[in-house]
Length: 219
Image (cartoon, rainbow, N blue to C red; front, top):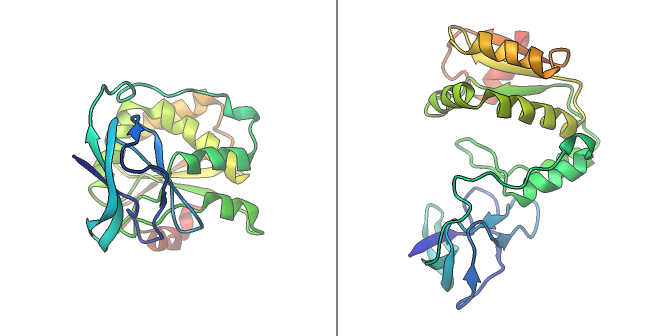
């Protein structure tokens, strides 16, 4: 059995879109965010919905979709449909990100209210791409930089367009062996005029947003 909580963060729970007896596919939307402070939830396995009920979670009890796994995993490890985002507007990109269930990566587990930010009066003066997070994310970031730097750089370009930001600062630790290669790839991508790499000394907790932004040399 696969238990998928509809509340996986400090915000509100998603509303179940499936019920007992329904057949779901891997990656299918099974919980829709009803308001700000929630995010979309997708099925991680194919199978049949056995029940939707309150189950124990880190928040005490949360509504949970219970799936009996059956069938084949046709999407895991594969690449999804790729579209050209260069001609898409910021709100269009944000809608795609939120439909995919994009959330904040941090101890607060907060859901990203991307559309709310874009539609508000505040505009980003710069994006800080945080590759100096505390463990275990620091090691995970290092692995990602070394294995798929091209995808990261493309995502930075996408984020700049989504937030209509003038540019981005990629923050990495001094001594990161991949920093030089990453800079070279940014130049090759044509983003060198809007994206720069900033190396900082190791200082715990370097990845904390408040500590990182307070180091005024970042931006």
